[in-house]
Length: 215
Image 1 (cartoon, rainbow, N blue to C red):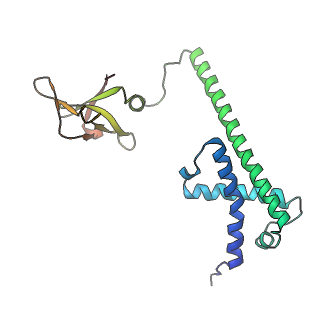
Image 2 (cartoon, rainbow, N blue to C red):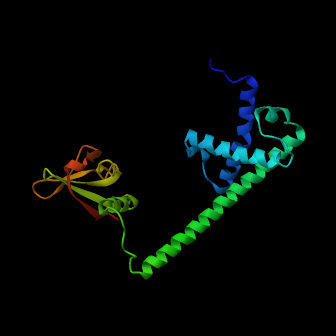
Image 3 (cartoon, helix red, strand yellow):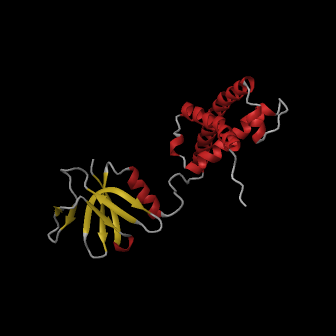
């Protein structure tokens, strides 16, 4: 027969997660990171690990074993104050650790760039040329239009609205504004406006992709 958790166990479980959750939110606000962007499971795991560290930092010096019963029975005013204090300090510690990590990452990135330039690899991008090109077009979509040639010998021009690389390379062209519409190259060699405001071109229908600067 399955034993369901008691009300005391549920209460202790809820209390256990509070310090970690508060600490993570304090740290995230200090560094400007939104915890809401994390998945639910990631929040639970981070809260659990942080709460475990906070409770151990308070309970171990007091020689209190960490259990469901101890969380409830030893939740006195001094212990609660100690937990709150460690929660705040831990939040600042998380923020400091995140800031240090970013600084180390930036230094490592700068160092890697200098080494790459020293070796003459500054203009080299590893990986798929197709992916590198489309990622560049995405970053510069405000100043570049794409011209897509299809396998049926049609040419479409517009702003890159969206793209996918996996499992297939699909490109979405959209009109740049209500006055800058999608266009298609007609048989006379002129670009004519289209009634559609977006066109999805799947990978199987793409022959070539060209970039044209618009501003």
